[in-house]
Image (cartoon, rainbow, N blue to C red):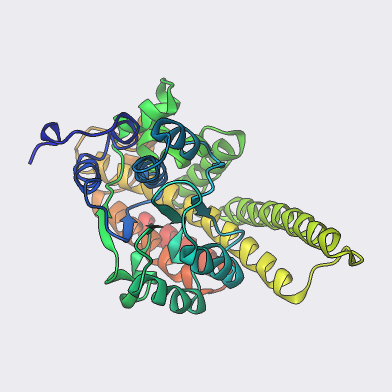
Length: 379
């Protein structure tokens, strides 16, 4: 079916211009929207923009002034009283936030029009308790309530949640679409668009000072296993960058939590202690761990991309796919290894990325990985 046969509102058409399947399904669903949707797809594929545009159309229908309702719903953060947008404050959603902002609020009638819309960003960050509490709202929704869950890892959601939501699929963005989102050109931007895996926000990160430094560290570490296998701890800069990212995330989360605690204390006339409680401290640890893990995984993904290009060159493909701005260095490394060894190096990095997601010792895992990489590539 062609999207041309569906009258798609301009905001929704713009938000889903790189997602024709989702665009068709959402445009068609506006006539008879259901109570719960699951927007599923990789980070950076446009789920949030599509959710905001879809929510704006839902709220505009039946509103006294549809254009004004749509305009306010498209603002981030939105002043529309019938749009609730829930983001996790750290590594996970707080159970209290889900209960108050979604479950209780979903039972209240709309303030303006005929509908209320609740968007839960990063739904995979809902704890089991939150998912269980949300289940009744999904099973017995109010006729005016519409829930939109955004999720990059649906396997982390309970089957009972998944079965009560209509899935809307989002695909990774292609390099051309990422370049369009970046609104810039040049070899570095092209490389970022290819290395980001379809995530435009990740491409933007790779073009920052921190992103460039991480890429340089990943490239140097990957090349060390090829041309300098005796170099001590080539992986160390990757681990230090991940630790720095974790520290920055924890500091920012602590600032937010202290501000929230101060506001709550002022509202209740209680003395502010300037300290965080145990639950908040645990949340800081989760935020730090999440940011550290994500930064380290990105570093290893960049190492993996180097070896993928290396395998392609060593096999005679003659084209650098992921690192087009580093073709000279890749050609130099490709002269030292064969395609099979480079392919095995890719598998070793992927295996370590999987292991690091289950709380293994990062330093030991990286040390073992580079020892195996040096042995594999030297052979």
